[in-house]
Image (cartoon, rainbow, N blue to C red; front, side, top):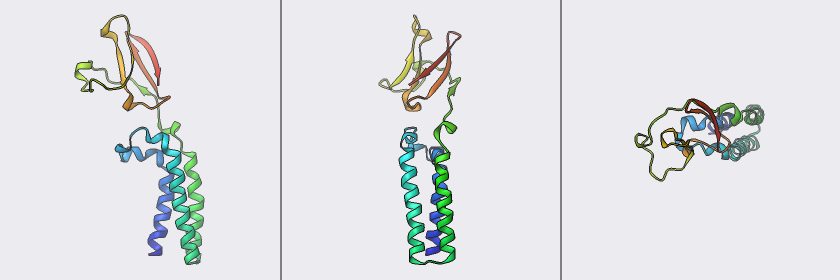
Length: 147
C-alpha cells in the first residue's frame, strides 16, 4: 500500500508541472481553468507533499526518503510552466456568417463592426479569456482585439 501511495505522490507532483495542459486532456475544465490554475497547483502540491511526508513519517525508510525528496524537487517545477507559454494569440480564426455559426442568439461575444453589417466580426467569449489576444482582419485591415 505504501508503494502505491508513493507512486501516486510522485505522479501527482508531476501532474502539477503540467497543470496548464490539463484542459487539453479534459476540455470540460474550460478556458477559465487557466485563472484557477495557481490555486489548483497549490492544492496538488500540498496533496503530493503531504502524502510523501505521511509515508515517510509512517515508515521512515531510505525508499520513502527518496520519494519525499523526489516530490520536494518535482513540485516547485510547477511554477515554471505558466500560461503565457501555452496560451497564444488566436490567429486567423475561421470566418463564417452569423446565421451559419450555430451560436445561440444570446451568446456573449467580443465584436467589432464597420459602417455596414457585412463587415461585422465577433468572437465567442466562451473561447476567449481576459487579456487573450485575437489577430484578425476586417475589410482587409488588420485588427487586434483583446478582452
